[in-house]
Each structure stands twice: as structure tokens, then as C-alpha cells.
Length: 140
Image (tube, rainbow, N blue to C red; front, top):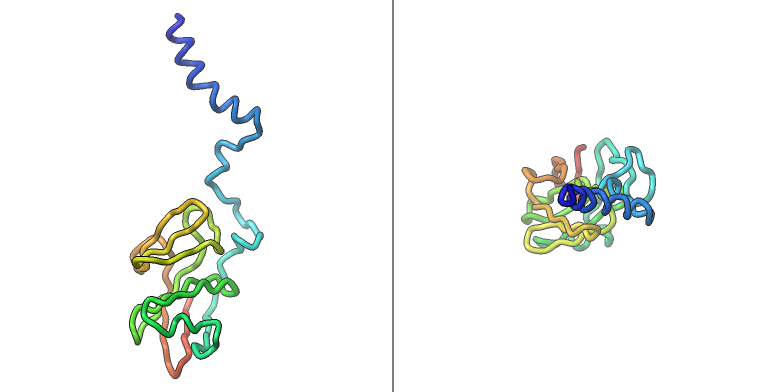
């Protein structure tokens, strides 16, 4: 009988204590649908055109250069002299858009340190792109 009680207390006490202290147990790694704060605004739709000569996109001039274009919710990465990939900048884990870093062909979200490849077969939503006359067009 004492052993069953001990097992029950071990399993039940942590969530009860966390709830009593006001620590959200189930919400910590979830996102609210339709959240409108600056980190989780909804994905925009429609084509985006970007003038690559704009100083804001100067990092895309070199292979491996990247930009988190928050105004259009895009992560942009220069793959080669003729290719730039575009991804939705919402982290698949929690939806945050503003905490990205890039190293070793991997985007990392700073909120929970989750990493995602810069490949269109990975977890980040990838959009088709084209470059003509210094203008990048992202189709989404």
C-alpha cells in the first residue's frame, strides 16, 4: 500500500506543484492560433519582389549570406550566384519569427534552440524564387 502511495505522489505532485506556482505545464511549448504579436504574425500570401541592390539585402550578395526579412515574414539565403532560397520565418516549433541565426547550412531559432536545414525538403516552409535583372521574386 505504501509503495502505491509513493508512486502516486511522485507522478501527481510535480504537475500540481507547477500549477500551484502558476507555471503553465502544457502551454510552454505551444502557440496560440491566430496570435497577432510581433513574433507570431500570420504568414502573408502573394508574390514578393525584392530589389537586391537595396542595402537592406546586401548580405545576400555573397553565397551563404542570409536575411530575416521580418516585413514579409521571410528567411532568405543565398545558395549560389544564381539561387536564393526563401522560407517562411515562423519557427515550426512555436511560431516565433524574430530570433533566427544561421551557421553550417542550418537556421537556429533562439527561443528553444531548434535547428532547421536550409533545404526545401526540411521543416521550414519553402517558397519558389526567381532572380531577373537584380530583382528577386518570391512566390507564395
